[in-house]
Length: 250
Image (cartoon, rainbow, N blue to C red; front, side, top):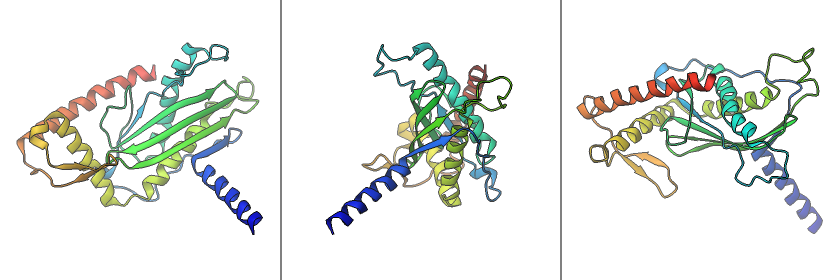
């Protein structure tokens, strides 16, 4: 009985480990999945991909890691990931942002745990405006031996399989979210932005739980002049963030 119980515990351990870590072979790039149905434009969630943490806090000088290269990767990888997310056609605007303070419907953060050209390991988290965690997972990709040979190199990034897998995992979580909850996410985003801009005017519309999640208590009037002003400011903020995209693309 003891042996059987031990085997059961080991099996559960590996099952749980598989939920938070995934190894992807880059020899075949998975297709980017698309939504199962057409979603009204008003319910499309915007995504902000934060410039990755280069993972240099515990950097050992004996390791073959070049900080300049790693910092460049921390800006480059979010660009490739954002393109994969956008190509699914399931989202609103997908933008790269310099920090995680940007208030948006869904924010994606990443840390480079390992990157040497042959193997890439990323820790990815995705949290919506309500504070609900969509994704908290480590992805490991191994580049094909032919990935860097000019004669055989395909048009994809050597680790495109990793980025497409992350995009597909995010879409899977989105597909499980009912339309009403998608609307709630967008409302919370707007109310959080409004509260940050004018705490006195918008205090009491949201309640934050001990776990850091946000619940809607009530809504302002649709013709509230302060709300209209906040929406104008938010639109200018979006235009500013859109201007940054050219920088990251370059």
